[in-house]
Length: 150
Image 1 (cartoon, rainbow, N blue to C red):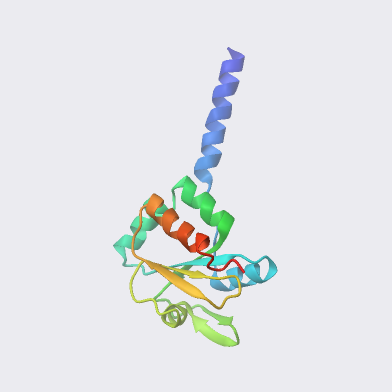
Image 2: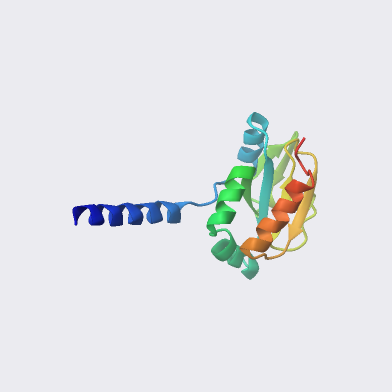
């Protein structure tokens, strides 16, 4: 009986730990510093506070265990509010707010996922809401096609 209780507690603990996993979101400048030290692509989730589809991505896609694992392994993940003009940071010798950076990346719809290669030069976008499998497929195609692998 004690063995059965122990196994049950072990399974509950494992499920609780797994449920606590989440995407490791960074600020843009933190992701830039991280990729300079250990090169990876950046995945920038450009959102607005009023965007319903952005909230749906947060609630459904970014909580999926496979999405969490894939993003944390392959990317430095960044959340960027396309309407935030308050917080500023430096990038390549210029000052940006999150709104100015989103504009510089030519983001015009939300949600929009900007992928930046490890050299911080080349970018591509995946606009619009995507369910977990579709989101993973899109990211996988970018990686498979060699974007940012140099």
